[in-house]
Length: 426
Image (tube, rainbow, N blue to C red; front, top):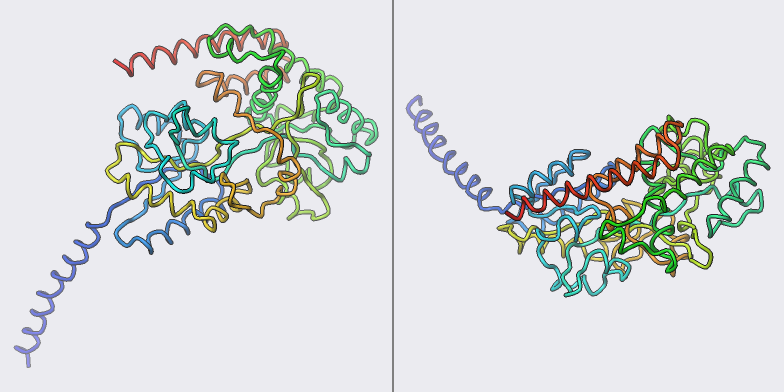
């Protein structure tokens, strides 16, 4: 009996390594697609993970490795670009052409490109027709507002800066100061950067009589023309149209205050409306395009690409990367991702059920302009804009001093960018 057991055990030991080797061989045979994304919320990431798992079930020979580096994303990608060692698929987060263009495979031959929203053409395509990335969704930034408050005081959503200022003053007067007309989460300097970046487009780009594209592009722009935005923001502060704690307020306060009907306007979009509704379903949050500044000009959406998938042109798995993009571009899958991110799809054949769907439909004919800093400012200016806003609101610098500072930083960062570009080409 003892000899029988030893023989049986020996057979088991002989069989097990073989099974293990077969399994290991099967796993090794799989091709791994590495994907880096800037998605930040749990709902966005969870939906992306579920779709990636569904793709793996359809493609047994492909494994998907998802990465969400968070705040380290940009620095990580710069290092990888310098080494020409990018992920198989990656998020261009607004820089599809300018920053990542030379690293991306051309996607023009893919079926979904026939349904690419024309608003994204200037951002994701070049003149020869190259398509740089697949848009998982698209940003349309404007002003978020409390419908209840505007309805209560008989105020129409403003279409011009003059109308916006009148609306803010009326809200302050009629609420006797109990409602903040325009709320900033200035502890995070991106709140001020968003103000400058968003309103710079109607100030300097969209009106033909005040078009500074050429000057901004060739470096001859006079920053005194930017002072209007600082003057306006400072005037709002002097008239107490902003929250008193605009420099120290945190984004985490916004949802609760809006749900208590204590805020009329803010620059925060995204999931704000649905987050407020979960706390107080009676409060209705809407979104409107960015008001025009010059007489005769029209309101605009600010945005373009938000989350994307670009394929690294030198990836050993470009074919598989395109298969994954095709999978994500299926209408049902594209709809899931758009709804998870609370933003419109980048495809015209996908209608997502998102919180601001009615607003986006109402303003469907309003033009979408790219983010100002992505087209006209050197890398690093976003942080400069944010800090400038904090310094203005804290009475550290005057509007004129802000413009001088922006001019100096603009020149410094342009020169730095040109130097780095020259070094990379050597």
